[in-house]
Image 1 (cartoon, rainbow, N blue to C red):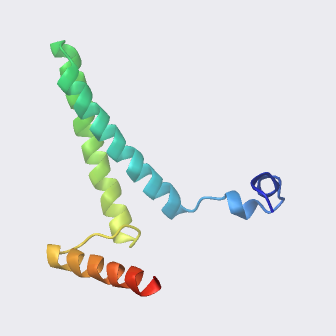
Image 2 (image 1 turned 90 degrees about the horizontal axis):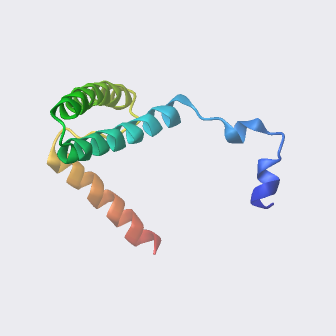
Length: 101
């Protein structure tokens, strides 16, 4: 079955996004917004524009924190309590990759 055949299918479940997909996509977009606003502030020469962008950046950061809290609490985003926990997880993933080869 080719890509175009899959797009024409009557099985609409392939095209549905669940709450997790939407939340993680929103989190990714939020990170991009924060990055772009930070860059725009650095480039802005007009003080009023800088202030407006800074206000928008602060709002985006606050919204990002709220969204992060949601996805972490639902277990959709791997948040680590300590750096050691993250290293342990990375080591486990690396060992799994090595075993698969």
